[in-house]
Length: 283
Image (cartoon, rainbow, N blue to C red; front, top):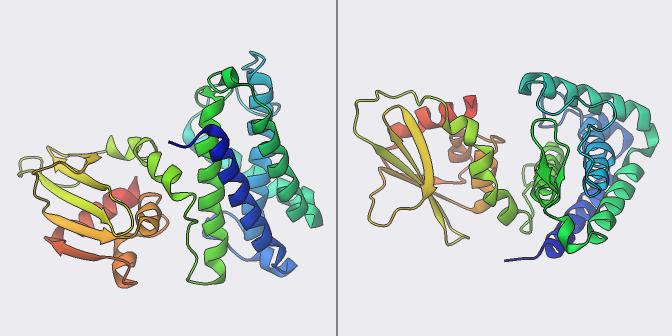
């Protein structure tokens, strides 16, 4: 298992790669719509800058000193719902993009360098200390996968607008895969659109470039996610690379789109795919 400092280096590498890509864009490219429906490319970059500059760096700097109060301009912990937070974050990025103007890309590079330097300066006992979060407190260590998730996925949201060959970096995939069960917890709590009296069925996701496999078993109106169960026969198996799996789980592409693009070939009862696709996308 990699150390926290190895994972900080992975964040640094991810940010440097995205920074080089951004420096190659023209001013008008930043006005292009991104894969995030609410934002232009420039506003996605501003979101990445704003998250690091205020809630992340500020929360960590104060959290290691025992201060869990909100970052200036942010709500008290667990006092607003997800819909409010989404609108709040959308508008902050738009405002931040306008405020940064021509300094947007420079701000991106400098903020991530400062953030990684802050993480490298931490003492061993700092990593478990709680910090402010808009919904719940989180340990300093939890900021590592969250930051990689933001960088890698929003990096794809940007790059995918400039060509169909955009991929997630190899370094980001292990962290992104690790947090998928937590990321899907709200989706897994929703009802699956299938008669609860029908026999259980299993969709299996297998990877051509990873040894693991994941089963989604639908039973009694619910879907549960677990590592492949030895001895259980899957009703449909979907084989793909890890990049495609992550984009599917994070709802950047649908199963229907992945099949049309030739990124996966289903084997077994393909009639299960539309219902699973719709359930995942709605969540």
